[in-house]
Amino acid sequence: MSEEVVIRKVSMFSSKRIWLFLAALGPGLIVMLADTDAGSIITAAQSGAQWGYKMVLPQLLLMPILYLVQEVTIRLGMVTGKGHGELIRERFGMKWAIVSVATLFLASIGALVTEFSGIAGVSELFGIPGWISVVFATIALIVIGMSGSYRRVERIGIAIGLFELFFFVAMFMAHPSLSAIAYGLSHMPLQNRNYLFLLAANVGAVIMPWMVFYQQGAVIDKGLTTAHLKTAKQDTLFGSIVTQLVMLAVVVVTAASIGRTHPNQSLNDIQQIAQALTPILGSVGGKVIFGLGMIGASFVAALVVSIAGAWGIGEAFGFKHSLNHKVKEAKWFYFIYSLAHIGGAILVIASVNLIQLNVDVQVMNAMLLPIVLGLLLVLEAKALPEKWRMRGIYKYVVWILSGIVMSFGLYMALTTLSYKILHI
Image (tube, rainbow, N blue to C red; front, top):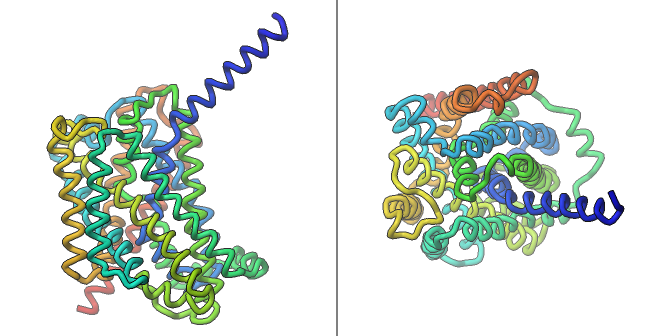
């Protein structure tokens, strides 16, 4: 074989790999950017403010957990060609499918309230009434979703979600101490109940119920097959690293600023975080930079959450549910998608107790984790052909890590519910 032929074949092989990677890139990244939503940012900020750099290591340890769970999701979607709701209906019956998607829709509405409250909070930092930004965001999200192209929706979502990279700018502006970070990495006060609760909040927030529905539906809507599996895994791994580095950046910026000057300050909303950061980072760092990061996190999460909810219901009840359909072809899908946004917007504009509602949403997500992850792992063992299932040590690692996530989620939920009952 001539050298020219070898070079040509290597070139063709490389081009094919690049093409497969670009084709598969997207679902993993966008769902991970959405995972770092407004509620997660507030949780990370509170963690850094109260516990400083001692909450840095957990963000790193959560990367493999996030990847391993979502890797199961993409395998289910690519191999079966079916969404999560559809597989639940086929394997466990309509009753379980209804329970699954009903809780998913409620969680989606609750998450949308969190995202819209984040958007409203940022606009109010600049003197713009929150209801104006919420109405604008609602209209924009509905229009984007109805564009008739999954790939277009994905590109827009990722482009806006990348605004989260501004959190890294804020982190460097805070001038964190490398020696203090190194000390924090080696000290995790697991015996302290307050630390353990915030740790549980971070762990419980790493896997949201809607993430499973979204990514499994996304690989199908994008037309990915098992030929794209390797690159889809790389996409998911990259997204897992990015999202947890964003969380780490938020922990560091609040640890280096608020945690150093006012370590016990309560941070329940965007205004409190921005006001606490401004004396250290200045108006640009505290408001503009942090605000842009929050806008990116809230907007991409609102987009992904609403799509996941509509997909899940469409899969369970068997009506058309693709973003590639025109509105007249999938009326029910787009109706549910729009209704979720409108419902979330109304709750925010109506000025319900958003802080309490955000806590309730986190508790509900935590309580749903055993159901969501349990069904996911059972589907992996039952719905996939033998050659595509997990096996050996890898299987037990995924099951053990999933068990840890579920345990922390339940711990957070039960602790919060107990506190609420005692203070009624």
